[in-house]
Image (cartoon, rainbow, N blue to C red; front, top):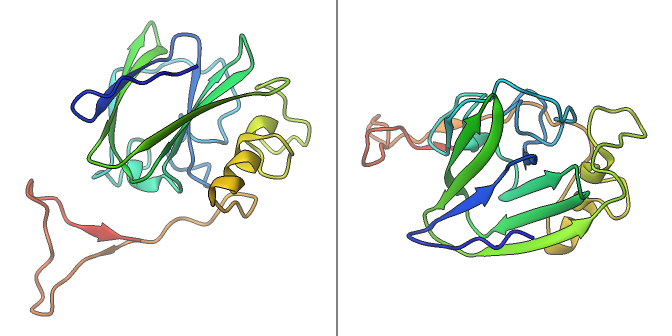
Length: 186
């Protein structure tokens, strides 16, 4: 079970032989890491930073639909999950020989709940929808089914692309963060 050690709002995760899953509701957003990623044999990962301030489809944590992170272990069929009270600021991934080996999750503030569940097979996809059964909200005992008890809503299949807008003041200027990035809302 994950036991994150929080230091300076950062904590490390061991991903050796495991899969990182982020909740996006859209198979085109964060394609290597979202809940529609069933292929446990993916390779070609490199050291990467996923960032909340990025709108890039491949690395933008802006596309996360829920502040939930899961780590699937295909060897034991355990699913470690983390529920954040606020959006994740960044996830710095490390890779070796094309496989993920670790991550450092950074939050700006808030709390983190950590849990674990067992699923018969984290690889099974009985309805052949491209999403493993352990991540299918329609299946009892799946992670989304469990998270409904935490107040999360799951409407089924992939949602349309999330629309966003720049925050603009009444005098026509855009609101910027301290590092010059534009503030966006969904």
